[in-house]
Image (cartoon, rainbow, N blue to C red; front, side, top):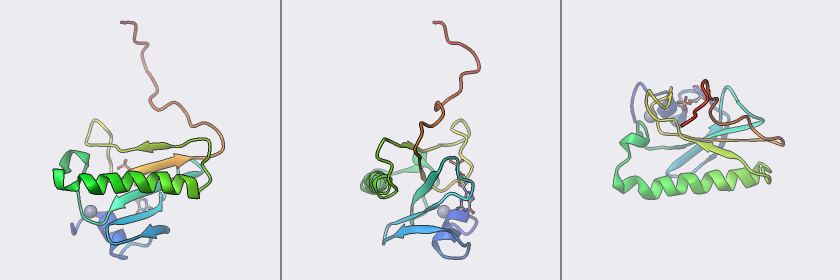
Amino acid sequence: MSLECIFCKIVAGEIPSDKVFEDDELYVFKDIHPQAPVHLLIIPKKHISSLADVAEEDYGLLGRMLGKAHFFASEMGLKNGFRTIINTGEVGRQDVFHLHIHLLGGDTPLPPMIYRTKQITD
Ligand code: 5GP
Ligand code: ZN
């Protein structure tokens, strides 16, 4: 656990959250600022700062996180698809430095993933 990390504090129950699921390794909760009708965050209980900080020993954990994304997409009725996002570091615009998968979906298609500010011609 990282003392300054808000997601570690959520896992520890020190900050309230709208929990959907937890087991020994994972914690799933609703994003406080949902970007879609369904917006869950899937995190490891173990503090890993980002995808760039994952070690080979964590690959199984990553697989379980993705598996839970699929599971909760089904549970939430996202039968026509959904989006999973992992923002990493400054370029990826990561705000909270505790690894998390965003699970987003609803009844209608989400906006394009990246808005192009300039047309790429070559
Ligand atoms: P990032 O930009 O790091 O990929 O995403 C961080 C996400 O965490 C954001 O979507 C933000 O709304 C969410 N978030 C930040 N603080 C809290 C919090 O205290 N509770 C919950 N439930 N979500 C949070
Ligand atoms: Zn943490």
